[in-house]
Amino acid sequence: MMTILETFEAKLRKDPKSIVFPEGSDARVLEAVSRLLASNFLFPILIGKEAEIYAAAEEAGYNIRGAKIIDPQNYERFDEMVDLFVKIRAHKNMTEDKARVVLLHPNYFGCMLVKMGEADSMLSGATYAANDTLLPALQILKKEGDNHTVSGCYILDRANATGENTRLVMGDCAINVNPTEDQLVEICGDIIRCAKKFHLEPKVAFLSYSTNGSGKGESVDKMHNAAARAKAAYPTELIEGEMQMDAAVSPNVAKLKYPNSKVAGYANTFLFPDVQSANIGYKIAARMGNFNVYGPILLGLDGKVSGLSRSCNGQEVYIMAVCTAAGAGIEWE
Ligand SMILES: CC(C)(COP(=O)(O)OP(=O)(O)OC[C@H]1O[C@@H](n2cnc3c(N)ncnc32)[C@H](O)[C@@H]1OP(=O)(O)O)[C@@H](O)C(=O)NCCC(=O)NCCS
Image 1 (cartoon, protein in one colour):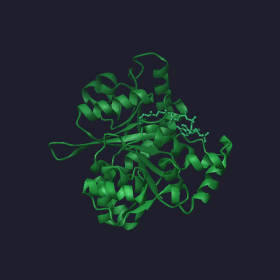
Image 2: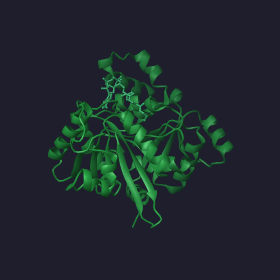
Image 3: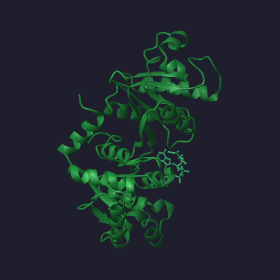
Image 4: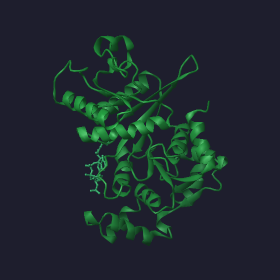
């Protein structure tokens, strides 16, 4: 059976794509870029100054000959980009002068390359903080006339001694500080679609400090109601909540706390009540449980953009580039 990476690579082999790397001089990005150039199914576009990027590649020992490099200062479609950005951001009184400055930032420039169809996807965050990637994506690549909630999930993957993999999906670990019930229902739909692309049959747990009414509180009600509404919205999916993490993953605890649930004890897809608990939760799982972690994969955007962790390595950049370009975070084309 093909691994996830092989599945996404096969998809790209049939229909090659391109991906923008705003951090064109980063050694980990250059490692992934040299590997992509050898593969011929995902074409990297690096943002920055050619001389600086080639010097960085030489210093790090990677061959990036053949990579497309775009310097925003000399980009031939820059005027066109400025006009489009002013139009997109008109409701925020964007002026041409301001746009000319903002678009020199590699993440804004990269998102606009995706918006203009010059690139198919973008991956950033090896050096920038999360918000530096998130805000340009939210401002430029939001679905037009749509209030759909954009969220960010992480895939956690670990090979077991048996040769099988444990794979989990967690969200929203990246964007919505305190999502409403409505937003959680939307995020649930997107996270289910994403989990399926990663070969999971999602069993979705809405997490809380309470299991099936054992505790009281506003955030308990939020997760309970959101789970009930998500069940109604996606009737063919396995969704349950609210529940504690032990009830979600331990069959023995589930028997006591949430009997007769098809999700409790076997959950593999987790929705957290807020970004703080989600971010802490996935990092605990990753560090203490020795998982490889991929994300944030942004869900619900009108464009393929993902983030990287600043602690990433070259292999993770490569995997995230392939997942992103293959459309892990959006509806399949
Ligand atoms: C992402 C984040 C920066 C957005 O901040 P914000 O205060 O909502 O920013 P703004 O109000 O300026 O929103 C910017 C745009 O994004 C849109 N937006 C914000 N959150 C959105 C969401 N979840 N879904 C869709 N659009 C969203 C806004 O509508 C706005 O659009 P507009 O400028 O066209 O009107 C904020 O939610 C945040 O800090 N989240 C946590 C990020 C983080 O640190 N994560 C941890 C590490 S991964």
